[in-house]
Length: 138
Ligand code: FES
Image (cartoon, rainbow, N blue to C red):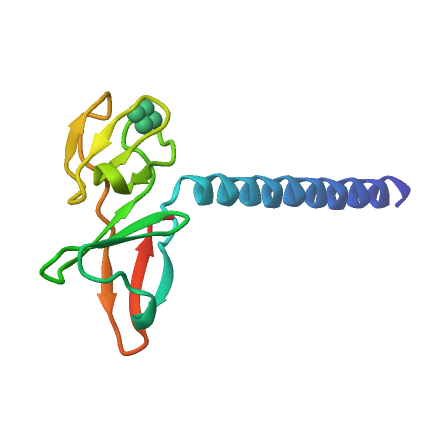
């Protein structure tokens, strides 16, 4: 009888420890998978009144919004395609310049020179009644 009770407790303990370890592994597995899954893009609303005028550039913390003289809008990430530094707008030279290794880009986002070897990342956006909704990749 005493032996049987001891066995039951030990069995119960093994089940609890095994279940806890299994739950912990599951939790860690989900956390790891979450880390590697692409995050959904963040959306930023830019009100109509805050859009750049034709021929102007709006500089956001993470984006450039360029309105060509014909009114066409383009949006680019400020993250440099070389190693990710934040690219700056140089109005008097009418270009975008990365301060880290001097990659340069036109106002249409095209690559001019430097180690980036490609143009700026274009950002998706849509016009809504509230304004322009810009997607910043996660
Ligand atoms: S990070 Fe921009 S040129 Fe290197």
